[in-house]
Image 1 (cartoon, rainbow, N blue to C red):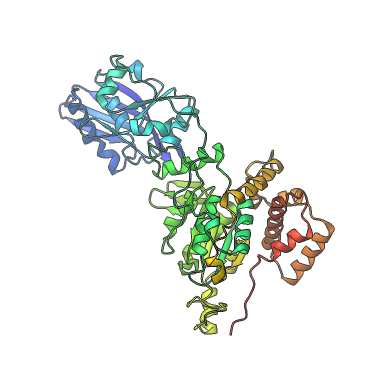
Image 2 (cartoon, helix red, strand yellow):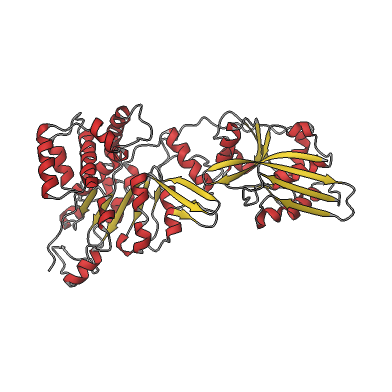
Length: 513
């Protein structure tokens, strides 16, 4: 007897419906259980899990001939997510569940030997694919139901054991559908380890630069001696970023679902991501990869912040792979079975010391490095990479009087209010233009149409472009940065003072020697 069940495979961030065809031959002389259709080791091992789970659930597993075909046969199958579909297929083929009860259904889950159903990764994109393909209901592990329910318009059944599922399919003990709470990002959720700008003493000009970065999603490089507060300032960034919209929250949650970083308690990512990988990270860890490609740190920081401390200590080859994602806002990973694209629209906050000893340019401590050492150290960041960073800020030491002052500085909430106002102006300006969320996302044609400069600002930009020998990329990035400063100033056009402030954030060469 032949039974056909729906399962789902992951390819990047997308799901693909897999037809699980189970053929049962009751007259087979030699017992067999074959799985075909490019299964990996984890899929092949499902034979033993399915056999034990069926027997330990009080059901029958006739020791005859079985052939399980995972179609399309040329699509690689990975992981244990097919266990439940294979088990239901075996039960349907042996007349232990009615075929009509499994029509237009998707089965996702790993089986334990006792018949209980375990969590698998990537349930949210699988549920979205099922909705697109017209499937009416999904059976998942109870822990995965909150995640699957983020996709509205499809019935979600949380299943704890294989026995419970069989009783439900026969109508003996129906399983209630999972009802999710309304999808609204919780404004009261505070990111873990959040630092308030009010707790950072001094550094007013650095705070201003970070406010501009948050206002337009611009990349930042902080340079300063050890202990001046670069890491503290970077960790305060999530507190001034605008709250996630529902669209952005679902977009980020989809990535975290594939990376298996969601919990059943909080299936929806409600705060902007903040990722801080160590500078020893590999290329695959940073941009994604592996034999079965998965998102890297830059994709996990999508719509949020990635903080790289001691950026010059990173492997130069690893560092250079950031260039394309910083420009295109996506990263494409190619493998023999195909190419997959992960989103990577992040705000980079990088920190570095000005020299190996860290005291070059410090007014209170003498630098012990030779000019050659300083030049070689600073040269680890290539020109093309520096060209993609809009804001370069020197972070000085804080005066003792400011450190001991009891006066509380401006809070993150106050700064965020201005940032959200600037982002709202950008949303209104970008209405009708797909793919634009902040000023940093604008292309050349968008800049020409949306960034109006006053005559005085145009004249200053012309002089600066010639004197500073700006590249085309730097030229356009200065205009985008000026547009953000104007938004924070509630100004419809870019004026000379906005452009002048943007120009001061270009990298400056200090005299060495």
